[in-house]
Length: 157
Figure 1 (tube, rainbow, N blue to C red):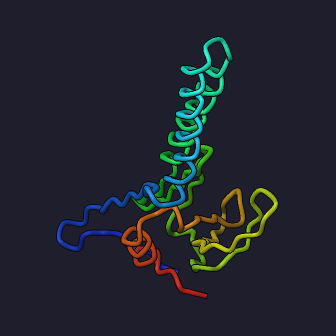
Figure 2: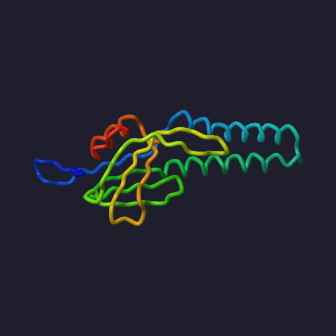
């Protein structure tokens, strides 16, 4: 499989970078902790000495932690290298020339005991430490998803 990301006019490599989008799931997840925090603040103000400030602090900390971790999700393609950083800030890299197969597949994942189906961009590369790189497409804007598919020549399965 060949992946070319270059500008034919001057031969310079075009850079592509996509970060996690702010979507409904992110807003709902963070919003839940913000609302619980506001409820804890209200309770702490109306019941002095109740210790509800601890709940507000925990909720605020969780909301900040979620925002920081979700903002860390990134796909970058530069100089013939694909780099994917996940929610835990773990980075996987592979050379575009090493990608043997690139496809968009529906994968079933288990989260909090429930099964969910999600679309993932699957890159199978040779000469890498891992067999495949799985990039969940749900985290990115539709325009970024389309551009990734175009640049990598992904096929729907």
